[in-house]
View 1 (cartoon, one colour):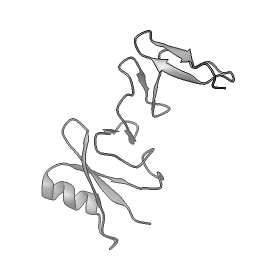
View 2: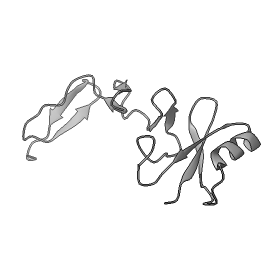
View 3: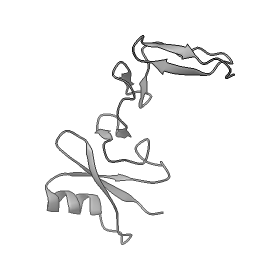
View 4: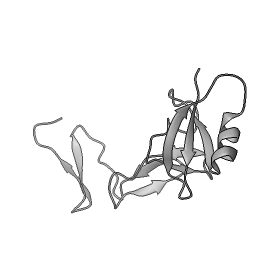
Length: 113
C-alpha cells in the first residue's frame, strides 16, 4: 500500500500532498526536516488519520485527524467524531433534507423521499 505525505503549514492547513517512496525510510520526518515544516502520513484508503488528506484540509494533532473545511459557517466541529455537525440535528424520517444556512435549519425538499 502506498502512503502519501501531507505537508502542513503553520496554520495546520494541508498545502501539498506527495507520494512517499516505498523504501522503508521515514519520509515524513526527512521531508519535515528538509522543508522546515510538519509532514504527516495519509493514505488513499482512509486507513489513517480519519481520511485521505486534501489540500485545504486542517490537521488536528490533538485527535490525529485530517478534517475538511466546514460546509457552513454555523456548523460546529465535533472533534470526538472527527466531523462538522449542524447546530440543529437533521430530522430522522423518510424526507430528503438540505441545510438552509440563512435560517440555520434543515428544509425538507418536496417530491423527494
